[in-house]
Amino acid sequence: MNIQIYGTNKSFDTKKAERWFSERRIKFQRIDMKRDGLSGREFDSVLNAVGGVDKLVDWDGKSPELDLLRYLADERDKEDKVYEHQALIRLPVVRNGRQATVGYCPEVWSTWE
Image (cartoon, rainbow, N blue to C red; front, side):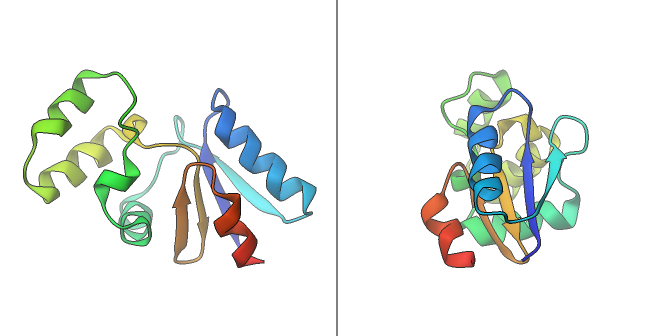
């Protein structure tokens, strides 16, 4: 398994995900979303794995970009806006090869073992 956890230091769910993998002695690579973010290919891979931009976005957040995103009709425009403003992505993003989850999903991660 090649686990990558994309998150921030202030994200409670990111800390819970790291703890979940640590408790099971599963090695993971932590990537700071604020500093590094997702590359174009990583973003597309996560987007395909989770099933679209609507499942990737943290709709409970508060930002002007999120308000604009609610009114964009074209899926590609939404994807471009989220890629430009990756702070809109719900954390943590956990990748295992081509598989990925967004948010705290231990029920999915347990099937990866």
